[in-house]
Structure formats: structure tokens, C-alpha cells
Image (cartoon, rainbow, N blue to C red; front, side, top):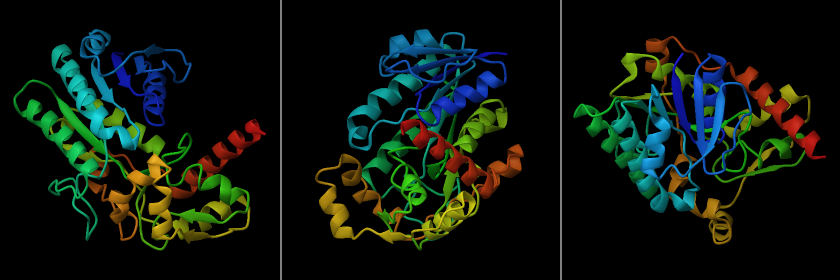
Length: 314
């Protein structure tokens, strides 16, 4: 078993660390706070990932370096360039394979299911930041300085998904409490939802297979569902009446954005939630033999996690 360094102890990074430790690997989990799961084989380390010298020292001897960092939306322009440079530099200096947790922002507003072969033509500033990160990493790969891959998912849901998740704390607890959900987009549009444990499994799977290097992949993701359909199925599995989902008026979202950094940053991503936004993950599934978790199983686990969390808080 080898050494793996996971940077970012949030909803995905912590899952990746659990997955790796369960396989018997030595895991160094890096975050500003030194947080993360307290499990055998996981060494939680407090460090600034933008400090290339510090990160390079932590990554010495590592087989793989995972970029699972997720700065707040309103900090992307300031935080991502130094972070991305540090992570790529640490991978180059140590010889570790570099696995990047990506997203779909780099593609143009879609008129069909998105595939990894689609050109990067981001319609937003955040998409341009992510596209540049991948292009810099891929250029280093093609120059022979590092082995790199990017694993892209759609909007996350599942255990641990909280304030930045559309199916997180503004969604599940309200449904369970019988309160109508206010959604920032059109709840009748088909949308791909990626289950967080599948994201972690995809990252670890790609890191262990030489076929993954030098290109981007999509996380195995179940068929698209509207938010109405998600709410219907989740409530049925939870055994509670569905109080319904209503679209939040656009003017209200814009007004709330003046007080909420998260809502304010969603304006340039609005195109993702008012038209079909569907991911095609067939390539990863066929290449690596990994299927997405069945929707009912994933939604049941999500409901169970939230019920435990709400009971503990009470």
C-alpha cells in the first residue's frame, strides 16, 4: 500500500480519505484547520495548500496527490490561482500523480448531454478559472513533467453535502419538516445530480489506473432528474408527504445576492438551472467498470444522514 495526499477535507476530500484508508493506504489529509475523519491510516494535517514548499514537503514519497479543494464561490478569483499553482508544482516536484476534482463549468451552456470530448468554452468567470486550471495541468502532462487527470461531476448530493449543495441544507431538512422548498432555478428542468460517494470512488479508481492519465473523465452519474422528481422520490423513501418545490423568482434571487455571497455568485451560473443540464458518464463507466449508485439507495442514505444530523442537533 502506498502514500496518498488528499488536499481538502470537505465533503469530497473526507470521502476520498475514507476510501483510501479502507483500502489500507497511508493517507495524509491536508486542510487549513487540520480537520477530517479520525480513522486509522489517516493523518490529518493543518497547512495552507497555497504554500508550495510546505505542500511539496507533505507530498514527498506520495504516489498520488488529490486536489479536492473548494474555496467559497466569491473567493475563486483570488484563491484558485495560487492554490492551483502550488498543487501542480508539488506534483511536478515529487513525481506524484495529480488527480483534480473538477466540474462542468468549463463547457459551453449545453444543448445536449455533456461529454468529456466537448471543447472548453466557459460562459462564466468561474468556468474560465476552472478551464485555465485544467489547461495548465494538461500542458504540464503533455510536456512530460507530471501525470494528471481531472474527474468532473455535476451538482453533488449525499451525506455531508451542506450549504453549497442545491440538494443540501436548504432542501432535505425542509422536505423532512413538511416545508415547501424554494429553488433558485426551474424545478421542472432535467438536471444531473452526482452522488458524493461516487465522486470519491471515481477519484480513487482513476488514480490507480494508468488509462486515466492525460485526459478528463465524468463521474458515473445516474440519469437526469428534475428537482420535482427528486423531491417526490426522496419524500416517498422517507415516508413523509411531499410539501412541494417552487421556483424562487429571479428578481428575489438577485436581491438576496446582495446579502448572500453564495446567492450572488449563482447569477452567472443561472444557465445551469433554467435549462436541461445533463452529464454523460458512459465513457468512465465503460472504461473502468464503475456504475453510479442506484438513485433510491443514494437518496435513502442522504435522508438517513440528515435525520441523524437533525436528531443530534435537537
